[in-house]
Amino acid sequence: MEYSPRKMQNLLEDKEFRLKKKFGQNFIIDENIINNIVEKSKLDDTTLVIEIGPGAGSLTYKLSQSAKQVLCYEIDTTLKDVLAETLKKCSNVDILFQDFLKADVVEDLKKYEYDKVFVIANLPYYITTPIILKIIEDQLPVDKIVVMVQKEVGDRFKAVPGTKDYNSLSVYLQCFYEVNKLMDVSRNVFLPKPNVDSIIVELKRKKESLPFRDPALFFQLVRDSFGQKRKNLRNNLTNYPLDKVEEVLKRHNMDLNVRAEALSLEIFIEIAKEIGGNI
Ligand code: SAM
Image 1 (cartoon, protein in one colour):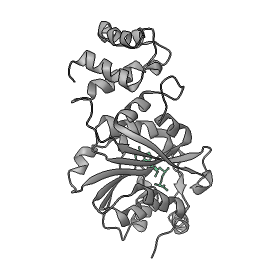
Image 2 (image 1 turned 30 degrees about the vertical axis):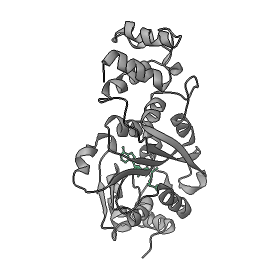
Image 3 (image 1 turned 60 degrees about the vertical axis):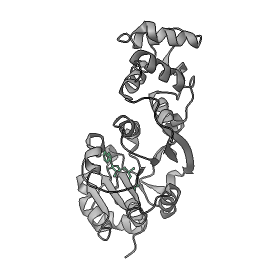
Image 4 (image 1 turned 90 degrees about the vertical axis):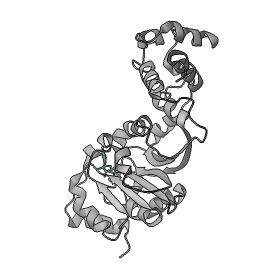
């Protein structure tokens, strides 16, 4: 029997499943949106898809038809029966019932063979930023990310220096990924209907190799620079060799009184190189 979001709603009722706000559960109930996400992701049968939060499995079911393998992380164990029913014919889907933020994804991936890894998900909005930071900081081998996010958060992905949306996430993303908005999504396609607007964004891994051999210092520097929002670099980077930081800033007509929001990705990279040698 073909799966459909309408059947998903009936299934949720049959299994007496209660949607949980604390897990950011807003399930997609519009098949067009699901088809759009899968089509725009341009996955093929060599792709392993990581889905964070399969929910009732609407998107998972469609992904399994195009991908080589789908590996899901779902925190809510009360979805086991629902997912078993939705995905009973999908032999290429594995679901790990655990918190994605605590998962050892690199280890989990060792079980599989694949050419590419895509992350495709309707993300739980309360942890969008930690999820993206984990993908980048754990250096997961992800070629492309296609995710539904809250519109305001999506705007932050593309934010430029000097704007209120610019933060450590913008710097990381722009260092490693090319950010594209794919489409706006109406609130009416979710159950329950959220109070925010959503967009689907695509993050494509940049082709050129990273400017560092070991990005750990760069991550730490960016995180610490934005540490206390109102503080300038002199106060946020007390544990760093400030003379070296200042040397780079001078080249850009800035000094240690500047705040992280004013620094471009290129300046962060320059500072990381200056303080870390040839990192
Ligand atoms: N993919 C489904 C859909 O589009 O209909 C559900 C999306 S819903 C917005 C987010 C899903 O993420 C829920 O199923 C929720 O239980 C799950 N979730 C929340 N926090 C999680 C976490 N830390 N790790 C894994 N899954 C999580």
